[in-house]
Image (cartoon, helix red, strand yellow):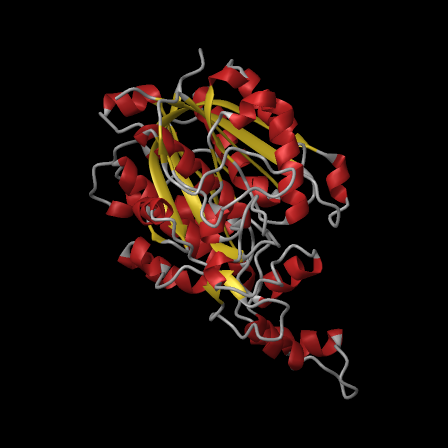
Length: 439
């Protein structure tokens, strides 16, 4: 069977900018940043108390009434994914099983797949603390015997189901009745690009007519903040407004700001989208991944072989540097990582890097980790569809060795291809190439 062309027909974004793609897009065009002081927990004893949170959000608003009890066993990461999935299907105009048993489905359930990137979900420390405290012996040391006798009974029987990374895809597929192939990818910040690329391959080869794909994660918790602090990745020296702390590729970049959110996209066969007269944001024409073993040294900045992934994705798309009109960067705001990423982009595009407009969304949202790539590719698709490059929030002048073509102003143009790529601590990277679809 010949490979089918694959398009993006739905954008579902839950981010610190708000609920939905419009909230994010409008925020970017208005050059707004949504990082602020952390209020979800007391962060006063940490090296930084800055974060990007999703306000006024609950997955209960995005599931059928019959499923709302299940929200009780959803960690924050799962809730974000469930919300983003519902938004994506609605944006695509696809009616799924979430509409009820009598609903007329747009696509047969067995022909809808799922591929979601996830991170290391942090357990509820208060919940875990009670169980551990009741398992201490007379000397105050943890006792396996006491844990077995009664400590673990302080955890609910379904406790583990809140914290397994595959539960993002599990709940999304149950809610929407997606019975096609399902997979979970856990490769840090590169997870969503890899998930969307794998979903594209699934649809290309006829394994499904559509798939919900992307990533979501919440590190806005004490363990997430502690781990990133130990990796020396957080902005701890910024003395100005909290909204200006995350500054990708900027001369004042001093580390990233922890955030939460996710982006899930509807990846659909072009023939399916045309048959139902669905809107198509962009075509996915290239995908590749790479791994840099040097990234195993997690304390040493690396871009995870990003350049290799981008080159392979462009070969897959059959295009050269001169044809690319937009670069959507990862841009963590960590000084060493920004330089490494710039080196990788320059290794691919050479002198073209000075011509091609580039954008980073982290200045507005902070780092979304496994959720970042889905948001970045949603921005790439929206930019192609609208022929508009949003500004890079909190960018004023480039840091040394960070000379990408970023701008603090929105730019319009006439471009056909966009490339987006992300890398993770640990050396993994993924890249996707999108092509404009003429109206």
